[in-house]
Image: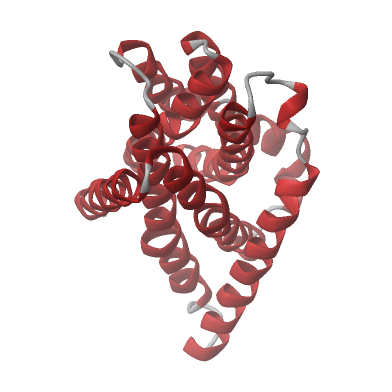
Length: 254
């Protein structure tokens, strides 16, 4: 049990590690902000479409026909996209947190949305890492390493816009750390409250739903904010790099 929990903490801390990168950037300019938002969109969209949804469909096909599995995953994903749009209206107004003008408020809003989405993303990952570690130590370690590698660029996605908006690199790194702590939190809640109710359908459904949330935020918040902040070229370049990084990571760890 302790080994499995340590794996969850390790995977969650990787988000904070990614957030620390903001401390070493020479300057957070509008262009680098736009590129980081595009990078975050590429990372999140690739994780959603090339990792999370294929995994869910593969698991559903153990119980349903290919058509039923695809329809179930697509339905949950679309529900996640709708929830992402609603999430943007439910989160705190960035003007309550930042007072540096519209440009800083937009960056703060993006950082807040991404932090909440990644926390939601990390929650089921924590459950899967815990269950993997309990089932098989070697398998749990491989899963924790895979999740950690995903989490490092996700930490950058939170820390850079928050650091820019708040003018505090430490605040940016702190937000990244907090979003990563949803990983062990998911594991702890599983042990305390959810374990009797866990089943493959619930876990896989959560993964498909969160994939939709991540895709919705990438399309509605990250890319538009990146283009507005740093220009189209910077945002699209960051997006391409984010897609490439995560495709390589997913392929290597499959």
